[in-house]
Amino acid sequence: MKMLTLTDNASTAVKDLTGRAVGTETGGLRISSPEAGSSNLSVAVAPAPEPADDVVENAGARVFLDANASAVVADKVLDAQLDDRGAVRFALTTVS
Image 1 (cartoon, rainbow, N blue to C red):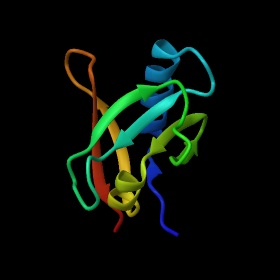
Image 2: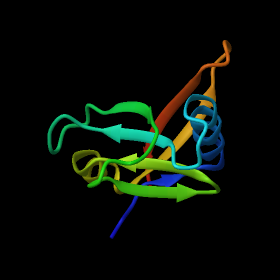
Image 3: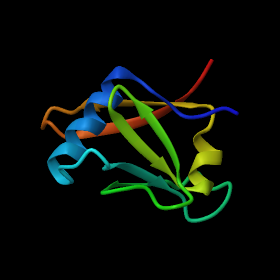
Image 4: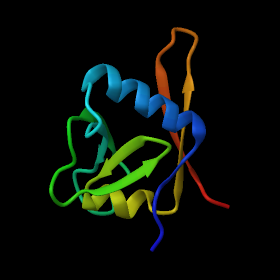
């Protein structure tokens, strides 16, 4: 089964965001989608995964995916960049 992959930059950004917002090791970044097959994704810091979420862990970073989002991002790589104001920008790319 294919699963979302995180770059080192994304792992660092997720750990930083969740550490500041949640302050617990159970926290993570939750990606959800309102309907199956929709690429309209929502991202939020969450204190823990929902019961049906898939959990992706990399280098201490945790990403929670609802079922709809999990299907959309299964073959993708999550990357993160800091913009000139220090805000994190996430991007999904297709695994080649």
